[in-house]
Length: 179
Image 1: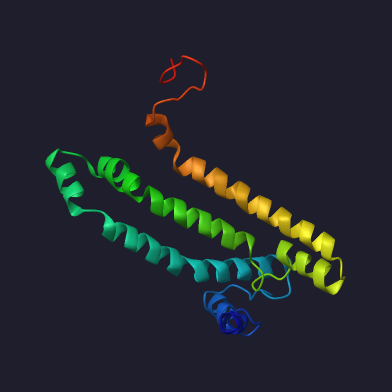
Image 2: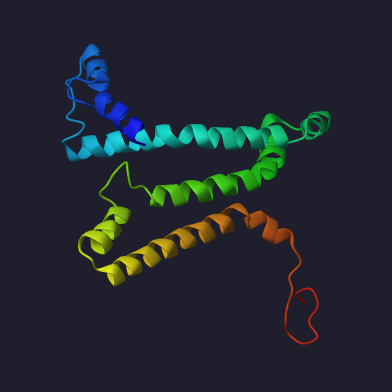
C-alpha cells in the first residue's frame, strides 16, 4: 500500500507523469492532489489499477475451469457467438462473477489507505482519536450492515435465474410443490 501510494503520488504530482502526458497532447496540467475533482480521479484510478489485476486472475481461473467440451457442443449444435456467451459462458461463470462482485463490493467499502476521507476513517477518528468507542462500534456495525446488504443484493442478482428453475415449496398443510 505504501509503495503504491508513493508511486501514484509521484505520477499525479504537479510535475508528474500524468501532467507531462497532458502537456504533451496540448492540455494544461491538472492539480491532481489539491483539487476536489483531481484527487477523486487520482484515487479512482489508483483503486482501479489495484483491483483489475486481482479480478482478472479470478476470471482467468474461472475461464480455465470451464470444460472446452461445452463450447464444442455449442458449436456443433450451431450456436452463435452470442448464444455461446449467454448460454454457456455466463452460466458457468456465475459463481466466479458472484465471488468477484461480493469481494469487490467489500473491498470498495473498506477503502482506507487510498482515500482516508471515507467511512472507515470516520470510524477510526471517532473510536480512537476522540475515544468514543461506543460510537465507533456503532459505525463499525453500520459498515457491516451495509456490506451484508450489498452482499445479499449481489447474491440475489447473480443467482436470480437459478432460483426460478427450482420447485416452489409451500409450508401450508397439504400443499405440494407450490400448488
